[in-house]
Image (cartoon, rainbow, N blue to C red):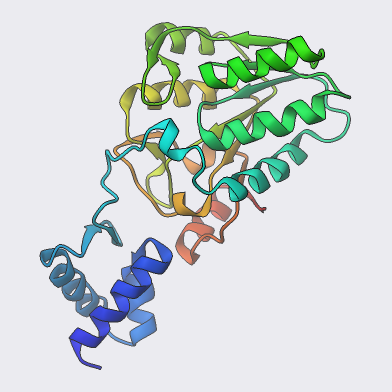
Length: 263
């Protein structure tokens, strides 16, 4: 196979899967990893992709790229709902305790499902996400579904979430039974990551505070590495996703003792 043919296939795979790995491409084409790296270098030079450690991602997936909450609201909505329903199985039927909800559209889907569940089994909810707090407060008025605690701080406009030292300190003083945490990337080597340092600090505090950490992430997040890491894979207990991690990520998750639940 000529290099141009191989590179065309690599481009198609990148479009379909959102990421390609050097080792897997070498195995697929029965060539050396050095050959694949040359292919990726050529495609990078042509502006088609961006090389990252171990492979490549589309050019528009920069480490600091972060769409607004409004832009993400309806994206992958059905997948997020399925992930949320699956994630709440972590609580079991007779759960009585506290739940921390991270900011994000997937955790918002968890909040929606949690309200339906809490109509029969009240749950104490804590969050620093103002949009989630607003919706949950309305549900509390409509019918008692437990308690709601809102963590304050400086509100970051892009995500409508409280961030900053005050927010982090408040979370560090908590010990929720279960935390549902969102992420922008799940990587075998970099762990969990997000584009913004302030958001990362809050997420790091949530992960360290909770007795059990459940990460909810759609398939687009798998294999991604954003600018700021906030947790190692070993820091989480369950990953709920609608995709199948590639071989490298699956092995890393298994080695870290993470349960992977597919919605």
